[in-house]
Length: 448
Image 1 (cartoon, rainbow, N blue to C red):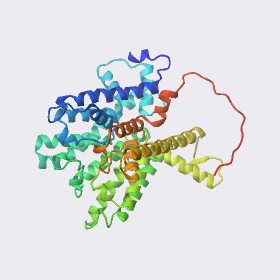
Image 2: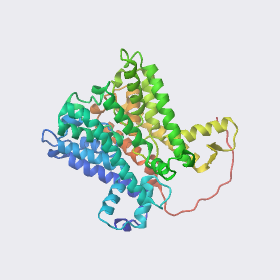
Image 3: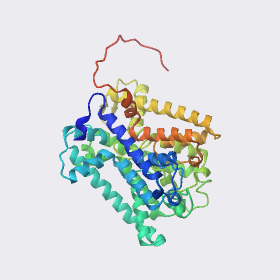
Image 4: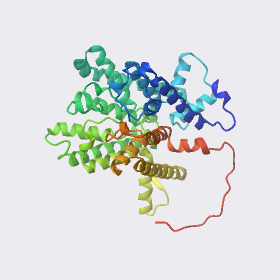
C-alpha cells in the first residue's frame, strides 16, 4: 500500500496536507489547458491555480465567472474538485479501494480517522460508507428539487446539469455557480424571491456544514438527543442559535436596504438565506455591496465562525467559539472549570480552542494589512476578502477578479489554510514524531 512508504518525518498530518496540494496542482494543470476554457485558449496558470485552490478548498472565490470562462469540461473538473475537497480526498480514495475490494490497512484507517475528524479508529470504514451515502443522498435530493425550477428555464438536460452542479456546490459549501449565463458574478441574485431555489440550497448548506460525525452520532443514538455525545449537543444548539439570531438581526438591519419594498415572506427568506450562506457557503441572493454596515459586519463575524468540525465547512468552527465563550462565562462565575450539559470540558480542548482562534486572528490581521499595502482598497473590502478566504466562504465585494498576483497568492494560502485547518498546517512543518516534554517551574503573571 502507498502508506507503507510513510517513514521518518512524513506524518499523517503532512500526508493529508500534501495530498490536498497534489489535488490542487493536478486541477490547476487541467484547468490551464485549452479544453477547459470556453474560448479554447490557455488560461494563465496563476488563475487556474487560484480556481483549483478555491474549488478543492470548497471556497468559491473566483477570478473568472465560472459559466462564461470555463467550458463544460472545465466546469466538470471544478465540480469534481469540489466533491473531492468537500468530503476529503482520503474518503474518495477509500471508497474507490472498497469498490475494487482492496484491503485497507491500519495506516490507511488511521489516516482516514484523522481526515474524517473522528477520535476513534474502530468502525471508521463504516463511517466512511455512511458519509458517502449521506453525501450522495443529500446531493441527489437537492438536485431533484432544483431541477424542477432549472428545467423549466433552461430545458431538461441543461436544467438537470445545473441542478446537479449547484446541489453539489451547496452541500460541499463551495459557492460556485453557473448563473453567469444570465449575468456574470451574479450568484443567486436572480432567484432572490424564489423559495424553490433558495430554500433547498440553504438546507443543503446547513446539512453539509453540520458534520458527518453528528449524523453518525444521531444514528447510533437512534435520534435520542439525550444519548448523543457532548459534541453533537453543542453543534445542534449553536447552529440553531446562529441561524435564528442571524435571520432576525439581518431582517432588522436590512429592512431599509436590500429588503426594502419586499413582502414580509420574501424578507424572511432572504434574511434566512443570508444568515446561512456566510457560514462558509459563498452564495449570495442580494447585492453584498448594497448591504448595511451592520449586516456586512455580521457577515464577517459569521464567516469567521464558520461551520462545524467534521463537515464540509471551514472557519474557526462553532465548537471552538462555543468553548471560548463558555470559558469566559466560567471566569466570570469564578468556576474552576468549564461545564456544559453536565459535562466538563478538558483543559487540552480549552488550550486548543484558544490557540485556533488566536492563530486565525493573527493570520487574518497579517493578510488584511498585506492586502491594504498591495491593493488600493478599503479596510472593509480587504477584511471581507481575507476572512472569506480563510473561512473558505467565497463571498466577495467584487474584489477578487481585480487582485494582483501577490494578493492572489495570499488569498490562495488563506483558502488552503482554512480547508486543511490552521493547526494541521502548523503541524505539517512543526510536528515531531518523537520527543519528550520538559516540565518547567510554574510562575504566575498578571493578565487582563
